[in-house]
Image (cartoon, helix red, strand yellow):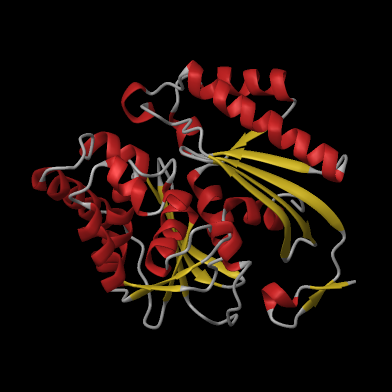
Length: 322
């Protein structure tokens, strides 16, 4: 038996196996290798690459050959890491918005299967929200009866999931993401005031059309690259993985200050702010931050708790035992 006190505050679990989860997103491909008993997750290794599979999917509805080959390269590297370091362990590979929206998704799935051996499961918006919810709470110490709203700002979509630690009560998947909204509204950098206004208005409309409600006392928890990168910018972290910002709090004021600082900058100038954490996100981070701003304003949250969990953590909790 191993104690997981570093993650779940003196609670002990008996971990039965080592598993791996790979999350293919619109912007990133993430690897998690962890011990899991189906209730908790203790990470052993995490990796991130940014091949941006969903570049131009919003407009073209097609995954480009170049992007598919980049993802193939990442997956082959991850396969090598898994087999060399951990042997023949269970692996689940998921894909989200970019693949869901692509007209050539069947080709993509067949190509990846043929060239890497991985079977990819395309998550529905419901699955994505559910797995994100439980994955987000996995690294955090929270009371079972605490009401939580989890926001996952991806490249192509944003998921909102509300509930308590053991129960998902509401979920929502919206087609707004950092890559999608950059390509729609913030194509030219620095963006004009009109561009910023258009992006903010689109975010507001999307949220106003949602039916998700929060109760008094709800805590906001944010996952994925936008939120982790924001934490790094707010707390001067040069390496997100080394710093492990889970549990850090970001206030609405801090968020708005970073947005105001970034708006007049080119992508190159944004990257120069913190190359270690912004590389690969410098041209889409503003759209992601505007989405987070919209969520916090819409639901009247004054702060957001950072989680380093996500879909891949939720996959290890939810997928293997079904």
